Image (cartoon, rainbow, N blue to C red; front, side):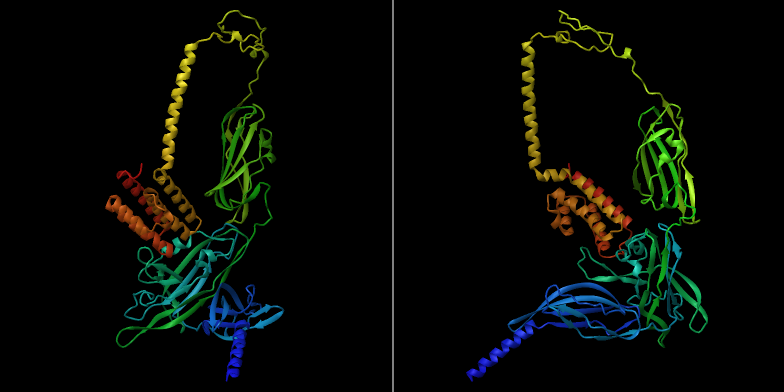
Length: 629
């Protein structure tokens, strides 16, 4: 009995070790059926492999594969521990029907391991005439920096009587879901820039009662984001139009249009789509007069927009890379100078186009400029819609009476041809440079003087003075020395007091923070507006929020990183500040919180103005309570 028990224990340990150290690959497919164009979550689980081991999905030729993350899980079997690494992917099949998801492979220590294959059913979108999708572009071919518009049109059949005057997307809950690949700024390809950031574009379309959800964007309700999120609903511009249904009859449809403008910055082809729609749509009325619907799945095919380079045919010598539409101006300062004096010449190219890549004109190649001025290399800068070229020039002779017109060429994207424009000629006045004659420099033979006074010489500046007594009084005056020493002692006493006062102020960190609170808030606000201007909406909103929280933290000498909105409100209430200022603070913080967690919190410009007004009110109220110097 003892022998059998011992053998059983040994085999148990062997089995446990085998379980603990055997390599294993498992796969998980979140759904076994999807619609054509949809993606499905696919996980690969690796047990007891080296940390460097990763799944190889090279056999997944019939899928678009996108890695979405990885992690580690640890499980215990008796006395043994199994570590499992999980790799997460999104699979988008190319075909339809029942498709096989290949097995992933892992190589370790010269040995190949394989996981299981799984089957996935990809259903095609059924023919239906309830909801139709179409993606179009205002231009199929454009040049760099030439804006174009992409339009998604969703045509939904009108509701049956007596509900025909209601919007077809106002009667279902939840709202139909749209998947628009080009609706997310961080998913756009390099070389494609939206004219309006997604937060402002969709924020203007938000509707609380009817519309579509887009890409599962959510918004959190409640101050501080304490409550669960919900899908944000957007309703774009809608019109009614007659279209043919599946039977060929012309009936009324409601057309909802999502339109977005893009500006390409690089040559290439850009894909827009496919767009997918899924949701329940009302199609009939039952005997009790209630609407009844059916689940609809619709797909809009992708479109491509090609961004082509400027042709070399007809290119002009004054072309420096500008593509778009522009106007050209010049300015020179000063307008009156002498031969050889430095003058500043500024050329400004203003308009819409490839400003950042436009080079400065080579003025030394222009005879009218080169014969009149010595030209130095230009500096270049871009600000808003203007490209500036700044030169330092020096007039060569006094015959120069104007700054000649400067030509520059650009490629007109609308007319598809090169265009030359010129700046206006500017009249200037140039004089001969001053020259010193020998008479302007006075030289004299040194003379010794026995007197103590210095005589005024009208002949000019003397050189070769050898007797310093001619220049100063050498008499000793003790009273002046004592007065000077007394003044120096008083000055040292004043300096000591000032130094002690400055050191005291520097030691009071809280006072220093209060004195710099307004300046620090201004810097945070400017950083927030700059971040929003480049499309970083969430980070920009967080910086707007920190502008207000940081101001309260500096005034109350608190750590800004750990200060919550509720803490700030409590501090403002105890400070005795006016109640309407506190209510404004709460309202703006709620707007910031809504904008941070969703795209439908209104225009970012409105939020920026609200924060700026709130800062002004806070500063005024804090100064009134003598909390700010």
